[in-house]
Image 1 (cartoon, one colour):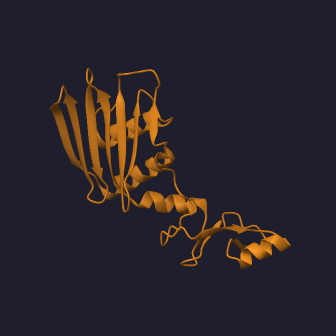
Image 2 (cartoon, helix red, strand yellow):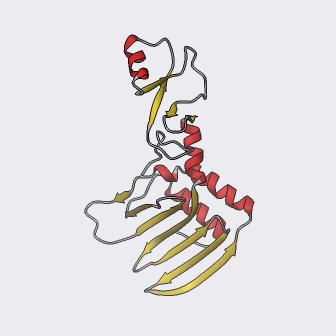
Image 3 (cartoon, one colour):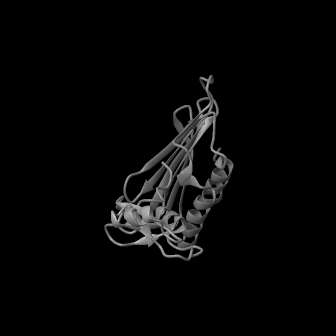
Length: 191
């Protein structure tokens, strides 16, 4: 699931419309009167609102929608590995600042680490998740024709519905940056 820029970041409503700028045509005036668009005026405002909520009158742009989407992240659960090479798992609770890391080999925990993160670290994690565009990763990455190997998953714990991303032998472009972030906050391997 990618970020839904059209969903109101204030009330969560989907009863929203695009804001159009410039001199309106007759058709645009009719659409505005019907509530299908909102007229924003003749002057385009750089960084100005792009969407309007018919339910709460909120106006926002894509950047504000992105900020709101990442602010709803409360934690992460991630794992990576395969049977022969062992596997890693991490759970990060951003509201409590707790981090747990586990290394599994052949179904048994071999090593584990528990940490507490400072508030500044939590904010940096959210900023880095934005930089790697985690919320816009595809839901599934699979390499066709490969039956075994490495699999991974990331569950984004949110205020609202959780989001799951996963793959087998194929990764999003920023997978290495994600693994580096996990290594930075845990102080342990993850890949």
